[in-house]
Length: 280
Image 1 (cartoon, rainbow, N blue to C red):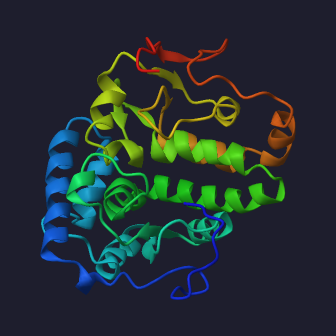
Image 2: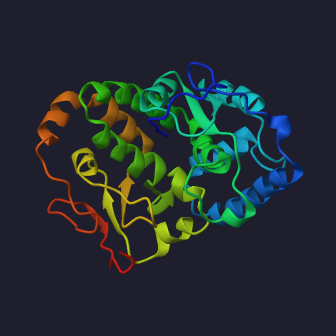
């Protein structure tokens, strides 16, 4: 959630704002409930169990757009995290600082009915429904904090592009193995009615095992469903990789390496399924 714009006058120094929960209209609450019902029905046998447990623990459905203060009380009791409202995209250092201190920034606006299946800027449904349930999982919650801490360090190495790819291919669009099957956990997938089908069922995309250097050399697309999905074995794998890797030497080693074509499999890839790339 990055921007280079100046901080709006009505925000706190850390770019947070009041959610203004009382200002949501009945129609906006009804839209949340509609989106929630549709996605939970679709994800019941597709999302990772930790995501589904998070939905239940945090009680995100049936009452309209969640009140961040009440949501944060439940989330803090589970893992020490809280949700704070921001006006939209925030600077990278602000975003990483919040994550490093176990605060997840979320937009306070909700899409219009005409944007039910696609919108360019992340709204409260993407941010809260997509991201927050997994913050109730202790291991994933620790990974997100570690990512924030690593993000602050990446700014010292001018390596933000490399690290942003890790976020994209895990936090936003990651797949995970579970009891022999692939499951969804990335927020961009679980909050998307279309991509939560495409990511598991469509023959077009490649699906390959997680490798940190490979991820950091691979760009991503923001204008369509993904051409490549990265599959992790567990959230513990993400956390241990983040904590155990000395990122400084890795950034230096990758500095002169060219980016990899998104649609091309590479020697050494742990191929889960080779896609047809028919959607590319």
